[in-house]
Image (cartoon, rainbow, N blue to C red; front, side, top):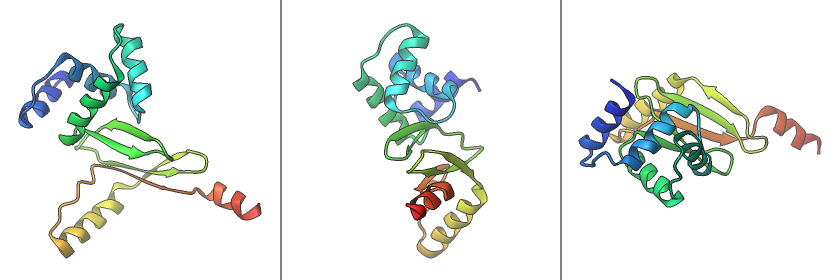
Length: 146
């Protein structure tokens, strides 16, 4: 399924329609790869698609896409960043609040956590995309020396 087809299907399944603005935001995020702040996404849309879009429209489109679990929001070291969710390939990150480095985390670790939560509470945790913030070893060692 094409990117646009996937976006249309997701929006329709959630009772939303595909607006040009939602399509532009979804397309930019799908093709950007990685995590983008709202400001980065806003600039990317204006640069790649040639027409500016109000920042508030980007926020509204992201909110709708987040509600549908098509987009995830993470705390990337004190700032929000957004990424397109590929449910067929969950991915997770460790994000250092000191230096901002990101490191991938084995999805199996969070799968076990999700299984334990479901067994203990009956709650189904959506762990398609997850970021854990903390402090990397280098920053911890630097803080210990200081």
